[in-house]
Image 1 (cartoon, rainbow, N blue to C red):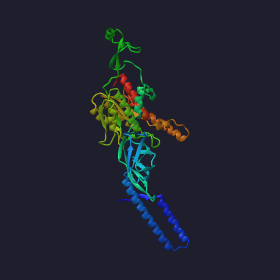
Image 2: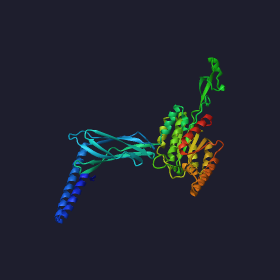
Image 3: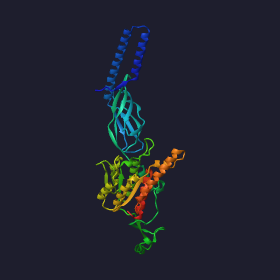
Image 4: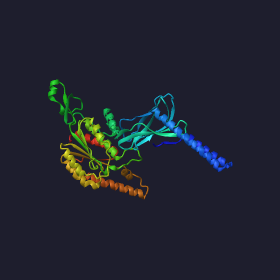
Length: 455
C-alpha cells in the first residue's frame, strides 16, 4: 500500500526549528557528536509524530465516509462554457470534526477549466458546494475521473492525498446555438438578422395546401372558381413548398478538412463549423418535411459513418449521435469512390450536398464524381475558404514581404476560384464561403431550390 502524503506546514516549521537549534549548538561549542545525536532524536521523534498523525487522520477520514457528487450538464457543446456543480457531504459523527481540504477535480484534459483547485472547510454532518467552469475544445466523449483531495491532518504535520468522487462520462457535441437561434428567429419572423433570405409570397409552392379566402396579394390565376361560386366569395388555392423529398449530406473528412483559422485554444475549427452547418441545414430540411441523411468519406478504413434518410425534427438528435465525434483524418478523400457508394445507397432522386475544401489539384477527380452524381441527383457543391487567405490579400503594402504575400494570396484565390468555377455544370449549384458563413449559405440555397421546385 502506497503512502500518499506531503509534509504539512507544522512539520516544516518543526524541522526548521531543529535545524536552527543544531546550528546554534554547534556555534556555542557543543560537541558535534552530542549535537548530532540530539538532532537525530528530534528528527526521529518528528517522523514518528508525522506517521502517527497520518494514521490517525487517515482512519478518521475513511470512517467519516465523505461523498462527492457532480452536477454535470447532460451534454456539452464545443467552445461553450458550462458550469459544473460539485458538492461534498460528510455524514454526522459523535466527534463532529471539521476538515480543511483542497480539491482538484479531474476533468478531461481536452476541457479548459476555471475555478480549480478549490479550498473548502467541511464540518461533519454538513454539505459544502462550489462551482467551476469547463469549456470543451474538441468534440467526442470526455471523462470526469475521481478528484484529488488534499486534506490537512489533525495535528497539521502532514497533508493526506486522497481520491474522491465517481467516474462520469459526457459527450461533447457541435454547438447547437446556431440551430436554436434559427428556430427562435424563424418564430419571430426575423431571419434576416442572421442572413437567411426570406420571401413574402402566397401560393407559390408546388404542393396544394388549402383553400382560403382571397386577400390582396393572392394571384388571380389561383382562384378556385367552383369554390367561389359555391360560397359566393372569392376563394383561392394556397400552395406550399413540395415535401417528402430527400436531402443527402456527403461530408469530406479527409486531410484538406483539417484547416484551422483559430487564434489560441478557444473557438471552432473548420470541421466544427461544418458540423454546425450540417445541423442547421438538417434542422431546416426536417422542418420542411423532407428526409435527411448523411454519409462521410475520407476516413480511415471501416470508420465511415452513414445515416439513412429519416424524417421528423427528432431525427436531428439521431443524426448528431452519428456525427458528433467525427474528426478529419490524414487520409486522402476519394471523391469518385464516395460518389459510387452514394449512388448504390441512394437510388431515388435527391438533393446531394457535398461539403469539402476544394483545391485545384483535385478538380479532375471531383469533376468525375460530380458527373456521376448529377446523372441521377441534384448536386450542391459547398467548399470552404480559409480566412487567412483573405486577410493576407487585404493587408496593407507595408514592405516588400507584404507585397509578395498580397500577390501570392491573390494568385492563389484566382487559380482556385477559376478551377472551382470550371466544375459548374449548367445548373451551377456551387457555394464557396468561409466556414462561419457555411450554414447560412446552405440554408439560403436550399430555400431557393425548394421555391423553384427543382429538387
